[in-house]
Image (cartoon, rainbow, N blue to C red; front, side, top):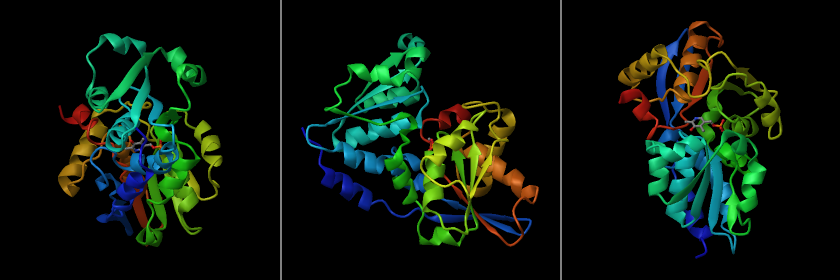
Length: 297
Ligand SMILES: *Cc1c(COP(=O)(O)O)cnc(C)c1O
């Protein structure tokens, strides 16, 4: 059955602008948070914006499937599975790690499966060579969403996260995974605004080249000091920070993306890296519903 692009447009039109929440003042700097995590319980945060124009593109006659890639804890897989279920796309994911075939599915993959996603577990070597994985996929039926959802259409969607009130801020900070979100903010922000991209992975300098495909990096400050050992790695100090942040501000972060970004921004505030009198907006990119179990179980 064909997917209706009208239902996709109606869904996105009904998503309210993300509220801006006051967090604190530190050393004369005001810190607020763009609560993009409140947009949808399952297609949460930046993943929703990244998917918007890809879903519309996918809803072409003859195409009723989405195929994508991800690791076992990928928020992107959750978002694609939920979106597919909601709009009527079949979904299929190549998952990194063939050893997972023999294991009980973790909450991320269990969620994806329950929402109808077909999971194909592949070796790390196969995963690196994504083009050949797609050899078996009928490209007329399946629209290919890249790993982490990043492409030009995703960057365009992310730009819509910034509404008029966001333009009052001098700095906008986000966690950086593949760089699509950061590029979207760079492309859509005003010339007076600086984007602080906090990498959650180690050795992320290559992402500058990726982001430069989509946006000018003139207003970017790329911060690489808060990866905590690499993607998916964290320590007790970060968990403590996330828990304290929740008890003070009643906002959950997670330790993979938003926790690292917020930890970094707090340290930068304490070290007076932002000029006194300036305003900083951090983006809550979501990522909560499954990764939360890592922290609180
Ligand atoms: C995927 C994700 C990111 C990273 O976004 P990129 O566009 O890949 O850089 C940041 N935060 C959360 C919560 C995510 O799920």
